[in-house]
Image (cartoon, rainbow, N blue to C red; front, top):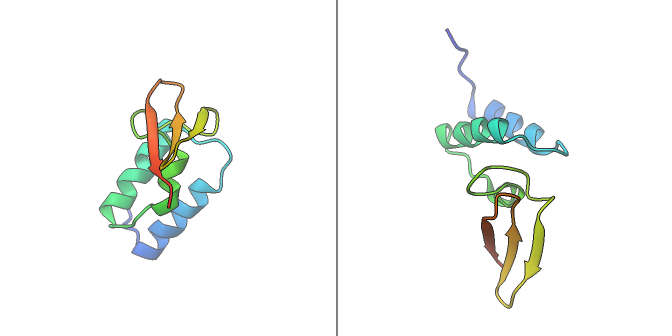
Length: 84
């Protein structure tokens, strides 16, 4: 039987994962599901990984448009984030 986490334990696990340098897409998928299960918003952590393949975005190309920051992933998907 799996141990249930509290919301604060889940939040700590998410924060510890995003302190790593390299993100793994299978681990990112697990962390994303954990945040959805406990209704924890990822906020700025969402800008660290691709929306399509969940790989780390720090290796991709970054462009700044007038209203958007566009990060292109290795898979070719263009992630757009609004500049506020």
